[in-house]
Length: 220
Ligand code: HEM
Image (cartoon, rainbow, N blue to C red):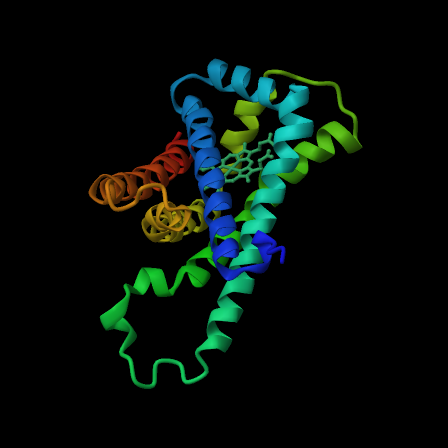
């Protein structure tokens, strides 16, 4: 009997964790490049020009990333619906707050808030970028990136929405980081404390870094 990994619920949890780990690696890379914009417009323009014109990044990594985002969202919604229908009495006997934290029970809520943020974020940056390069076929200007980024943070409402979203991101990562190690079974017991500490550090510092970048460009 052949059992496809996608057809088992453990398999689905593992795939959810692997896509989550992949997105967390992307976030670190994304934060590093964006943080350059705080220190040097020239370095930020160089890095963005490379990412925006490199063939491998554009036609291999970018599609894989978009697939990762869509997969993580679709699988998250699917698992949530399955979990809900497997517990029709919905904690009539159990008090959920005794068994799990608010954050772990609300991953779908924080996840959907992040996806709403991504819709705005893609409208702000990704769509104009694709239009510039692949629809309008404008000539490449390696110095445009810093200015484009800075102007996006002129509006207070956008900065507020971004910062609120980074709070949801932090909540999501606080549970998601350690949960992904548990689900993939990477010798979790041996490293429990290390993973917990790393998880807290990552979930606070990475969103805080994004908040800093948004505020920096708003006030400058
Ligand atoms: C202050 C915070 C942020 C800034 C300034 C920022 C900036 C940018 C910029 C300039 C791009 C366009 C890249 C391009 O295609 O040329 C971009 C794309 C993107 N951003 Fe952000 N970002 C921020 C936060 C985030 C966060 C928190 C996430 C995830 C939760 C995220 C996810 C993405 C994704 C998935 C893309 C599309 C990547 C691609 O180009 O394929 N960003 N961002």
